[in-house]
Length: 384
Image (cartoon, rainbow, N blue to C red; front, side, top):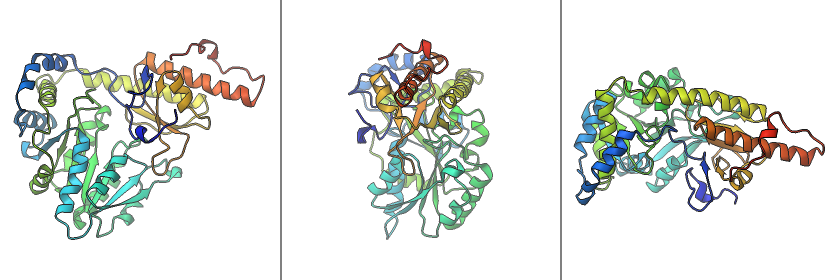
């Protein structure tokens, strides 16, 4: 099966025989055990409505992130906030909302603007710059730009936004009144999260809305819990008006509050350090192996790797029971670009083994008599 519109995002394993899902970027350590136990203990709470103001959760997140509680807003996953923000902004405009979206990036940014009746203007990033945002974006921020979407680390390329450039962007947007949504859902995988997060400049930049989630870093995508931080209470109130009541489920409040409070009480909790060490080591090894197989690997900074292959991989891996993310439907990318999650060592070895098998099979077809790549003698077993 070729990737279709159903593969707009990762994690769609439900109509496939998939054993290894590398298409969604979830912490390989899994959801913290105590949070899972708390969910079991409080399952009976599903018989009542959740707190519509999610007060305990909001307080815990604010303490965890060290920001005022009134700066925090939660949603049914980060995606609900991605959609709510442009609707809130469009409501105040006498003309259609205009948003700038660097591409390639998460497709829901543009879809959210379209859903709000606005116009999403694409800023296509250049391959020669490693698909990084450069100071060229400052020229694209016109006086009528109402909203700018940024993602740090970027999805799907994995690169980081340069700090000085980010400061210049904020300065220009502050002067023009442009709201900046900064998506940091992958930043907790980076060791410098606390010093790199945009939350540190929220006070002097009320136009900045920092987006984060428990989804990726705490391996709970099925529970759906995202949150935003912003120092502009009027903007937050407008966003809140666009979100249905009881949007944050009882399960999400239970799991999120449990994790946030644990981080506050146990500052030496090793879950995040172990996560970052695992990702760092496996990421380096995977990148090296992919380059050995002839892939063009883009510098990763989160829990996934983006690479380009001249040899088609999607269908061959799917037949072997492995799902990766084809990036052919990202603006600015083409067929041959893929994104793969960084998982546990055993799973990563399976992925690399199967890619090697596909590469060697393609080489034999093109060059009869070709010798297998080093290590191919152990790669005969399919994981499908």
